[in-house]
Length: 194
Image (cartoon, rainbow, N blue to C red; front, side, top):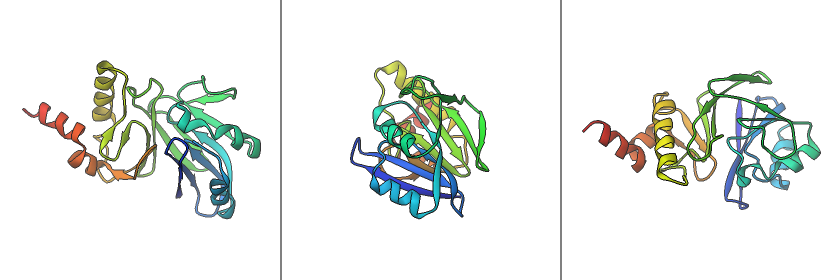
């Protein structure tokens, strides 16, 4: 499996291309934009976008869908059908789908948005806006923040700490680094153990 990173100044968001070593059908996660740069990565590596995976439906993560759908016959996977005007395969918590031989597990982590999913592919976690390097996702109120924190602690932190985190914004990180250096997570552990 190969993972390619694409940064867009539109929304300052990350998109990821995931496919097999030898090209063929591939998936794009959170296509915030579909520009010449991303098209070049796809085409030069012999990929065809067959699947679009959305961590949540905020504009910075879905704006590229319309252009992708004009170029590729891609199916959309998300936790909500309320995404644009396209049919969506609704994928729920703990559901595993195999896309072109690659197993993708959906982990529902609500709080930043009600439909937030993290995708686990091998030892990689595609976290959208749920968890980024040094931060947890933004929330609209204290209840949502509490829900997000609890969801992260119960559903992500018990995983192998060597997992790589590929967030919707900012640089990649690991679960171990977040346990050690993310102030929100560190503070949560301090409160639980005192």
